[in-house]
Length: 136
Image 1 (spheres, helix red, strand yellow):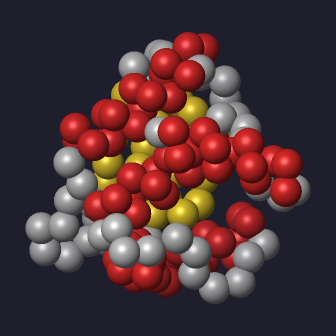
Image 2: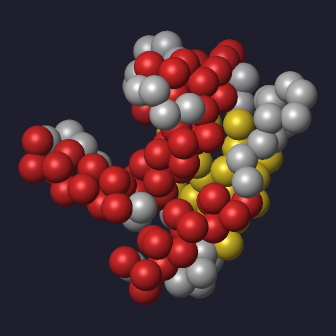
């Protein structure tokens, strides 16, 4: 299975996602894409200021986004890093009426699919990516 490490550095208090919940997502990806059974992913929660900076510098976006993915180009075991903004996950969880932890699961799955090369620039790409994301 894909192994992972979570950096909760930007979170205040005891907010955490269960490793069991994250393992289910990664196990699903390992089943769907056996090529990635032995890979590593880093997950980090960052501040509003850091998310805005990363989005601007590396993705050409403006403002804060919910999730960013950065591939590791060294072709080693590390697939890359998934960056999350917790306050956006809280707001989106309320908006979609499924709660914060469920939203974080969705964002991790979304970020992981980006690391595997999926995108949603076109309607066809979006349909394919979100179909797999919903399965996870």
